Image (cartoon, rainbow, N blue to C red; front, side, top):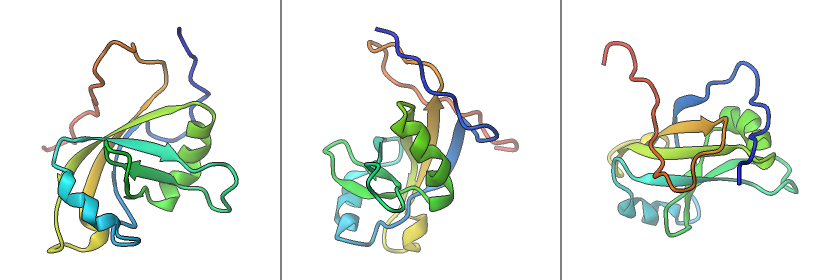
Length: 131
């Protein structure tokens, strides 16, 4: 079954890197030990009843480890709620030696067409210039 993705927000990147915020609240930091560089993580949009909805980052087991920054969530949340698919991979995971908002860096790819359900997702952001 092919599903058409909703129109993607104009002027926003379909592939980007982001930090994960809120990792130290509500005991979410205890799950960071389960995350390694290269792990696939799930992005989940808040239900529409939230006052300021966010896009949450979950480990494979389903536990949340934090959320994307509000400036990303403002445009990504409505797109995901409308059926858009965003995939995430941990690029860098660090411990308590770094500030909480820099402990997890993600690569996010927004799928503007439905992926083949039999294909293993591969995130494919272009490499930054100079790296």
